[in-house]
Amino acid sequence: MSSFTYIVRNNVTGEKSKGNIDADNERTAAKLLLAQNLVPLELKEEVLKTGVGRFKNRIKTKEKVIFSRQLSTLLNAGLPLMQSLSTVVNQTSRPAFKAVLNRVINDVQAGSSLSDSMAKHPQVFDDIYISLVAAGEESGTLAMALDRIALQQEKDSETISKIRGAMIYPLIILLVLGGVMVFMMTSLLPQVEALYKSLPGAKLPFITQVLLDFSGALIKYWWAALIVIAIGGYLLRQWTKSVGGISTLDRLKMKMPLLGPIFMKMYMARFARTSATLAASGVPMIEMLITSGNAIGNVHVKASIMKATEQVKGGKALSDSLKGDPHFLDLVPDMIHIGEQSGELDTMLAKVADYFEKEVETQIKSINTVIEPLMMVIVGGLALIIVAAVLLPIYGLAGKNIGGAP
Image (cartoon, rainbow, N blue to C red; front, side, top):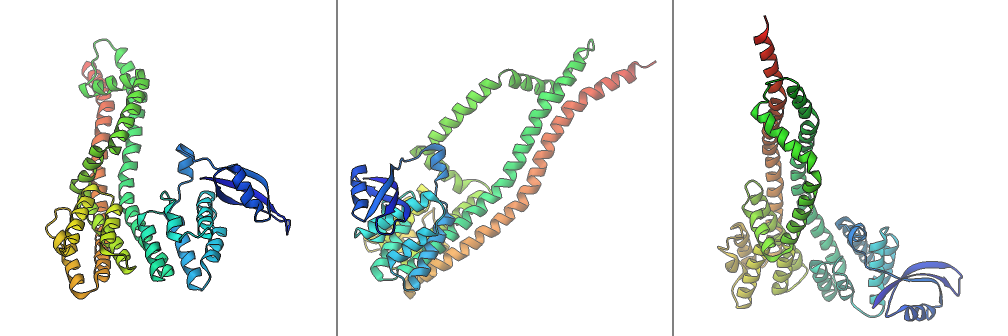
C-alpha cells in the first residue's frame, strides 16, 4: 500500500483542502476520495526520502512529546479519540510528522486500534511508545499512558543531551586548535624555512624540520589525505554497524575512563525509567523486560536483561535474576527486591531512575571541572610545540648574529 498526498475540492461546500490517503494505487485513491464527495485536483504518490531529505524529515523527540501532551490533554477533557487526533494534527507544523499522523488517523477510521496504527510507523513510534499506548487502550487509561510517554521521552532526552553537552566543549577546543596548527604549519613555518635557505650553512632545529616535513607532505598530498580520510570514515562507519563493532563500542562505553561510570548510570536510569513507566501502565512483566531491553541502547546490558527475562519465565524473581550481573549496578536489584516485597515495583523503579538521573547530572558537572584544566594542559603542550618550532630558528639566527658581531 502506498501513501498519496492530495489537493481536493469538496462537492458540497466547494472548499479546497490538503491531506494524505493510503491506497494500493492512484486510481483507488481517487475513488476513495470521490466516495467522500471530494474531487481530486492533485494526487501524488509520496516517495520515501533518503540521505539529506530523510535527515530533514526526521521527527524530533520534542515534537513527539508535544504531540503526546496535546493528545493526552484533549482526551482528558473528554473529546473523542478521532476528534482529538484531528485537532492535534491541525496544530502540527512539520509536514513529515503531519503525513504520518494523517495515515494513523486513516487507519483508526478504518477500524484499527491506535497502537496498531502507530506500529506501522516504527521510524516515529518505537516499541516503548506502542506498548504504552496498547496498555492504555486495554486499561482505558490512554490519556494517562500518553502523559507517561511524554515524561519518559523528556527524561531520556534530557539525560542524553547532558552527556553530549559534556563532550562538545573539548571537541570544539580540539577542532580550533587543529585549525590553528594547520595554519601555522602551512603559512608561518614555510616562511621560516625560506629564510634559512637563504642563509648558507644555516640548519633548522629538529622540531621545526619535522613539522615542515609534515606540512610539506600535507600541502603536496592533500588530495591523498582526503581520500584516506573518506575511505577510513566509510570503513569505520561500516564497522560501527557490524555486530562486532557494535559490541566493541558498547563495551568501550562502559569501560572507558571518566565516561564509563556515566554511561553505566545512564543505562540504569533508562532501564528503571522505562520499566517503571511500563509497569505503572499495567504492561505484563515479561513484555516490560523485553521492551526495556530493546530501549537500552547497549547490547551487553540488553543481553543481561534477556537472560533475566528467561529466568523470570522460569519462576525466579526479577531481583534475584539481576543480582550479581556485571552489567547492573547493585542498587537496581536491591530496590527491585524492595518493590517486589511491598507490591510497589513501579514506584521503586521510578525512585531508582530519579537517583541515577541525578547521579549522571552530578558526574557530568564533575567531569566538566576535570576536562577544563586537562584541555588547558593539552592546548598548552601543543601551543608550546608550535611556538618552539617557530621561535627556535629565530633565536638560532639571533645567536649567530650576536656571536659573529665584531
